[in-house]
Image (tube, rainbow, N blue to C red; front, side, top):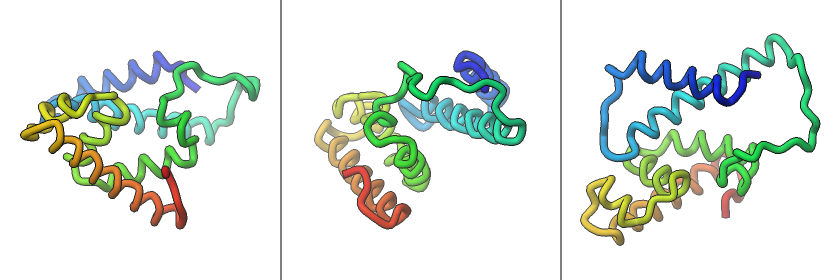
Length: 147
């Protein structure tokens, strides 16, 4: 598989080549745009690797120091369920979850980014989005998840 730097470079090139299609809908929108492109690049790389096979194998105990907090917390299977569920949320709720969970924004920062009247309003948006996300994941996985 490609090195992480290669995947990031491919992502940035694709983003720049299609920048005219990007519509900014507030703070965090560009990060979400890049994240979506990166996920597509990773999926393509996985499909390519499955078709051609892996040429080198890494030791099973080798762990990446760059594993995300979300991935460490819930594991790969749950991460895939999380990603599928996140994509079904309305855009504002997606941004609220991404800004809080993945980017670590405070509720005040989220309020500013999503044009909410207060940090409490942003907190309620995040809470409702997470509740909806958990429900979708529960339905997707036919059981409790992310609790």
